[in-house]
Length: 241
Image 1: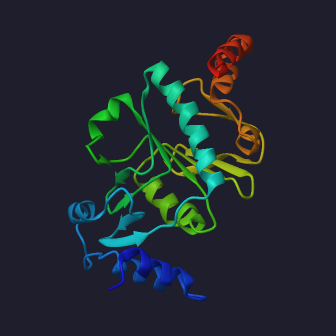
Image 2: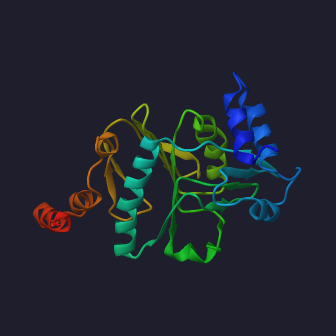
């Protein structure tokens, strides 16, 4: 009898299998319950190794992130974690962690929850919108990130939405205008973005494309105006055996 790993391996080897058909077969192989499915049942079914989101009672399978996507996500997570924790602004949460909106349960790559909204945090999901959502775009996710999620996050009144595309080296930063509609604040491969949600935080977009990525500590020093030599000495001390 085939085990789960063998079934999925066979699916991955099928030539030119349409995305929707592939996702359906993976769901079947994973033993996904029939639709429509309540969010509570979805959370019972989903484990931390299963890449899936919940939309209008349906399970939507997602693909693993590339190494570069993970590196960019990790850099932003470390950078924002240091900044948010030391400013006592709230929490930075990295995937996998669900964000429950009105008709969907999404799993953003990164999200910031402000201190005043920490009561929305449950043990295994955020019950309501985050204050900032960051999605790292991949060829597989581009349609969802620019389409469905864009409008879901706008309707949910998430004040800032960052879209980072390591493949094309383009970033887009959206914030609300007076009518509570997303407006592009900055887009492109370079420039300086100043966040309205994270007080005094700014980001040099070109940092995201550097290889290797810059040191989060040195980047924080630049953002906050700390003498870089202090951070360099600290990092040198850490590297000593």
